[in-house]
Image (cartoon, rainbow, N blue to C red; front, side):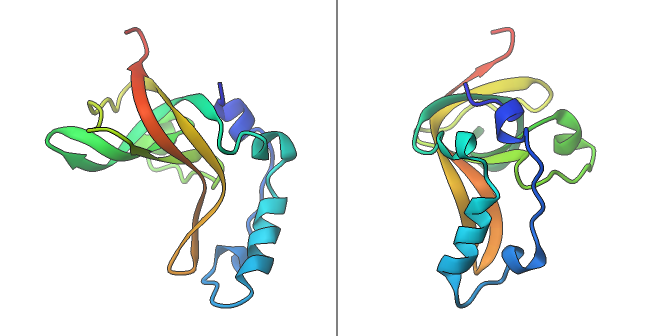
Length: 139
């Protein structure tokens, strides 16, 4: 299990320098970002984990969610509270996708990747998962 008690159980302050856009010195900035993540969290990199949280669908194909954010709590998901960078995991499902379940906790199983993710030089997250399957609470 890699719950948000571990993934977001530490203080993190991401400076504007680290948020980007980074066009040069990428290795230096990456090292600074990685240094903000505790060793016990970095140890989960490339591990198969079960993660419980709230789904925020990003991409739906044929009625199934293929890409989503899994959020620490429902307030961040639905009520406009801005989450910190360690309070969500970006998930891409490896198979056809999963049923959208937005008002209840879900558990996603898959391989966790810990480390900065950037798009066009901007820091977009520090956690992502290759999702294998999902279980809804109470099922």
